[in-house]
Length: 196
Image (cartoon, rainbow, N blue to C red; front, side, top):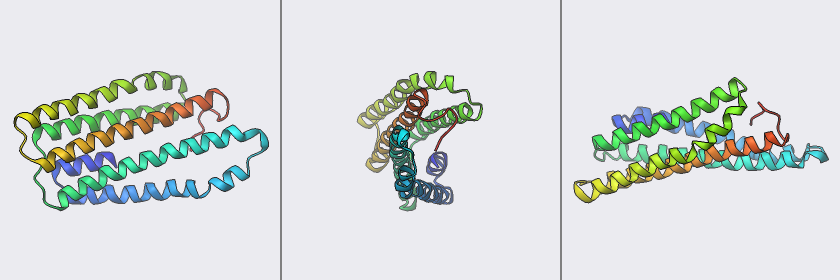
């Protein structure tokens, strides 16, 4: 969804952005299904599994945050292209594509950790969180400089800032979800390899 949104925006491709919006609709329904089943999940736990319900509720909250960030990024990108606003500038696209690469690498690492059950790699991954956020802060600072010196499109600048800020929220939610998983799996509330 993230890749489609950034690709569609950078290429000014409305069809790719429509796919992104469909993807977010599907993801939202999956998370809504988890949300709708929370009562039954908690009700069916035995008395010794109260911490498991806390894990489920916390993880669900982060999944909702992830979905909301992706939805915002997808809708904002779609709206920009659908309203025939100017294309983003080359430097903005370059920065967004680099950011897309950070997000892709993070998600691929997480997927590999769970597929290979190499959960000891979660801690180093989590330690990289601030580095990722610092990279986004640097891109925001660069855009501030560009805006002060030569940027001429208020809509493009506003979109660019909002996409980077929402990406920070997305990365925080992903890392918080992984941190929650690690915390609860270390306390044996969830067994390693079990994920919602």
